[in-house]
Image (cartoon, rainbow, N blue to C red; front, side, top):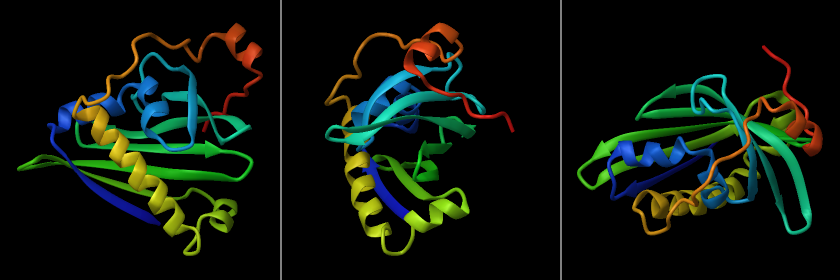
Length: 171
C-alpha cells in the first residue's frame, strides 16, 4: 500500500471542502483528465462521480464512489480504473499547529488489482500521490481557485447514454 503525507496551511474544514467538490479532482489528482458527472449529494456514502483518466491520448472513462465519509476528517473512495485496477483511496485529515496534516493511503481493492498494485509499483504510486497532495495543498491554501460551474448529475440517463458510460452494479 502506498502512503503519503503533507502539511497544509489551512484548517481541516477547508481541505475537506476541496475533497467534497468533485470538480476539483481533475485539478489535483494526477492522471485525472476531467470530471464528467457527479451525484448531487457527493461525498455522502454511496455517492460517486464519473471521470476520464489517462495520459496523453489514452483516456478511460470510469468512476469513483464514496465508501466512507466523516467530515472533516476522513474520506474513503473506491476508485475504478478499468480495465486494470480498482483501488481503495483513504484520505485522513488531522488538525495540526500548521493547519492540517493530510494522509493518503492507496491500495488494491481486489485480487486482480494486486497484480498491478504491489511492492514494485508502490514507489510510482507514491510519486504520483506526492504530486497529487501538492496540488491538493495548493487548492486548499487557495493559491489556485476551483473552477466555477456545476456538473451534470449522474442520475441523468440521457447524459449517461451520450457518454456511453455504464453504472456500477449495486452492492
